[in-house]
Amino acid sequence: MEGMIMEPINHETEICRFMADEYASKVMSATYGRALSIQQISEICEIPIAVAYRRVRRMASIGLLLCMREELVYRGKKEKYYICAVDVLRYIFNKGTFSCQMRSATQPTVLRPMD
Image (cartoon, rainbow, N blue to C red; front, top):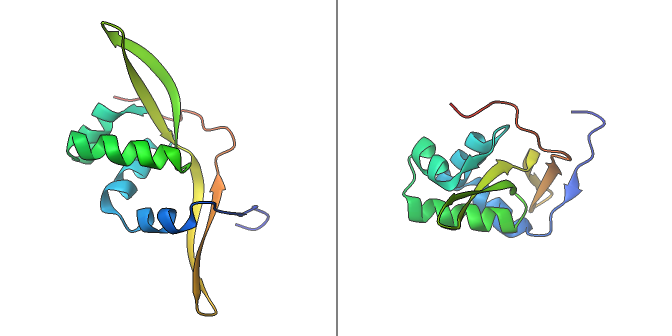
């Protein structure tokens, strides 16, 4: 991974906590390269829908997920589709301290369509 630029993280403590969270790691893996609705995330990751809404909302607010699009689905209700906004995330222990480094996806693109 030579030549890649790693940036410090604003929400470092929270992102480090998410790295250890089973649901968050499932969400990041499921949304890497494909935009999914929260309903799809819930089903694919086998996460209760309420938990999926909370995790996705918080992960988007700290930069781990990106809302790629919104679709009108029923009577004005909008469904948002999220994609992983991270290419590389590292948890580092160096000389007695922990830190995180992240390389954001500069232009997240859908790599694989949803089945």
